[in-house]
Length: 235
Image 1 (cartoon, rainbow, N blue to C red):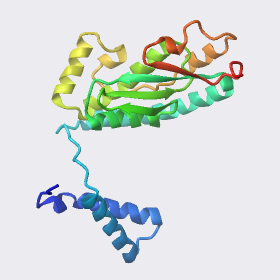
Image 2 (image 1 turned 180 degrees about the horizontal axis):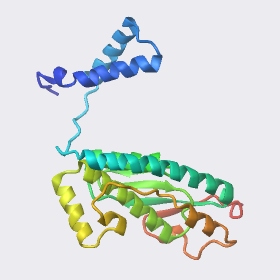
Image 3 (image 1 turned 90 degrees about the vertical axis):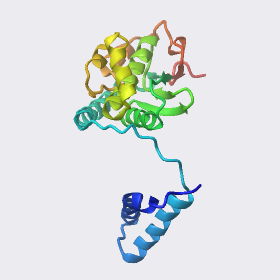
Image 4 (image 1 turned 30 degrees about the vertical axis):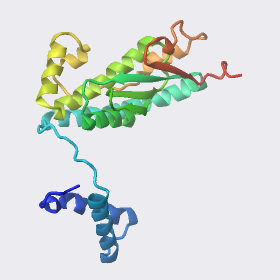
């Protein structure tokens, strides 16, 4: 692939960053180690060349700041909720694989949404269908179709937050039109990048105190596959 003549200048910040990361990983910022890091950085950026990521050309710093603040809060909140589920529910927790079809087909937003949901305790990306724009999550203690739907809404809210931050003008306009038309939850209808946790401890733990499983299994909802970890159901 032919590279533009100014590619080295354009990639200089990336090369510097890769060299700094290399030195930090080894804990050695000596000249010899940094030269090795530079050689490897050039190898990665020139020989193992990947297509550039398509950017939207917009970035909203206010929405990003709001997102960052709520993200830190939700990580702390979800960590506490997961601890409660582990202590109170224990092996009776019923998990599920939940498919969430996103609005966007952008690789950048798809990745940002998946990583955000994974960093918030209670969920983990297990599969990505890039062509369909669908993420599949292993969700903690999802015991009913309604809880699976609540999880989907939380994932779509995270995606909406990233669209407000750096989505294309067309994606942002489509999101606002969807919200005006009532296609989003009440939390999403506000033009804000605040997010909510995919784990709701109060609902999950109350449901786990029942002796019997709910009548509706997670598998009854399209795109949801139960992964039961209950001791009573094991052979």
